[in-house]
Length: 342
Image (cartoon, rainbow, N blue to C red; front, side, top):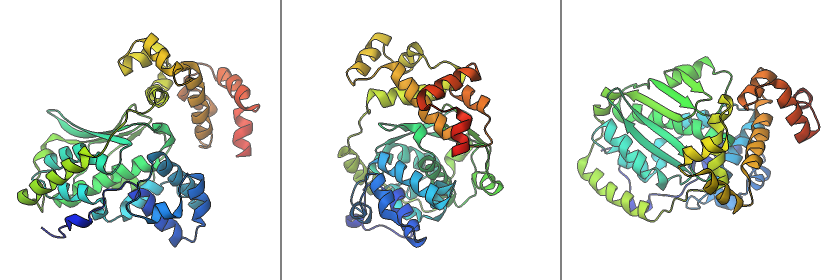
């Protein structure tokens, strides 16, 4: 197998996306320190490959840098440039697997080694196999660049490890975009559905048995042992109840179903229990719902080709006038006034 790792020097710290973005910013001559400070990071943290970076800080830094560089698809561009071997131990256990299905199952199990804020699940049926991303302890809809980095990296891994230009049959993402450049449509190789209720990349089931070019069962067995040890040293928290509720509310908003009963059902607890657990954090369901609507409204209004009536629908308002009244209450301005100022 080519490019075998030296086990003693394999980095398992999170923050690879942040460091790739930091390098690009430095190359572009960007004054990075203010962006890092606003994200709760320091130069020392980013330049130390063994320093763990909080997922929330990573998402914030990518967002700020994308705005600074006027790069609407920063996460995609970073994923296209990165050397996949920089994923460290995780990459090598995938690259030594027998088949693509084996590799994706391993990626699902050991992904927490590189990012504790994202849970990756492998699913399989008679027609397809898929990878599902679920955010843990961080609000999902604050992010676009990190999740798009993950998706493009997954596409590159599947193609590089099999030596074939395998393309998914469907990609679903929870955040919203109004358009996708032609070049990126070609890169993804299938229709991308934005504003979905799930983050998922699905392949045809027969791809499961596609052999990995550099499969090495002996090396794989050794690497699995290392991964199990690394995984045992990680603790993945379920996050606060506020964040869990936010992530449950988000896909329900456009359907007008963001209600306490429905969210409690999705989280597998009673309404009373959910209300009690939110109260223990000093929160109420109504406060979380309004806060999330406000945050999303500000983001959606930045997309100038998205009509105000569509923004209202996305936020779960049956009437545009109800959205206007709510927004005026939040900001003292109408949605059009804020959009014009921006």
